[in-house]
Length: 219
Image (spheres, rainbow, N blue to C red):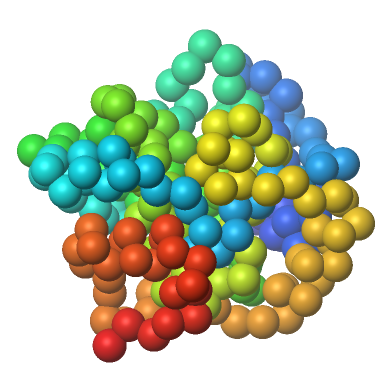
């Protein structure tokens, strides 16, 4: 285990850069600093009426940090991916330190969607997500956003802007502005494991999708 690399990775995130594998089969990583950063305002996911209806009528269960390795493995299970052996091993270390987190979406006990990322200060850096059935990556995003909002995080980072993320409420922030936001959020503290835990889809939707409820406390 390369713990020195782990320290560099943590420092890199704190300073606005992140590692990506150069290739799927190699072990080399490269550092990325986007000129434009993708963010979703905390508590500001756009949840369509159709998606809300689907959530209500379908039995999807949610868990956090129960199947971390499996989530990362599924995120990497595509023809082209930046999640190589080094990234996978480093995130295992970060998970063991309580810094990396995953959300698991299951149906009938089977993992059908998920998302993982890194929590530092009051920033959650979403790394990757996957979906085995329709919309389950969106459900993972909703559940993770709710957890992040509930825990008092100030930034939900998606690394790169995209049309898909924009449709979910994503925004684009220039590098200099992101660095200022990051610096302020890094000196604050958030609690990913705040109690009592959110447990129902009504609660996840409330804390993920309504901007007016960003600072509301859950009893």
